[in-house]
Image: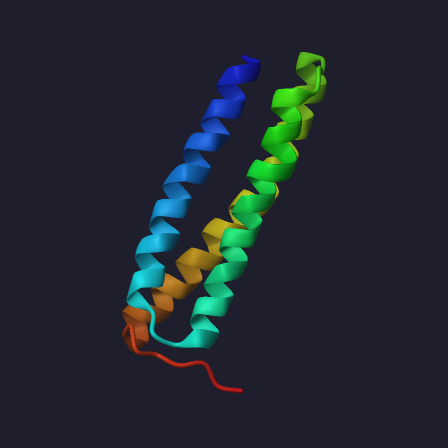
Length: 100
């Protein structure tokens, strides 16, 4: 169970990174790329804080489950950010630009 939860989240992070990279390749505006970079930072947090700690520290199954549930929060933020930017590309095209 412990490794299954970690592997499941890692798989989601890997899949999200692939989608973020694909979207990054479509964007030309530095402001939009910076917004997408925030998604990458959140994915880094999931891997470098939550999953790394979950792999290294001994926890009860309940404590591990709770810890991994916290990892889902920045993962969800990253997914939401990417989807928001994908909607912008769908609505305004890949050459959309930020204002301000």
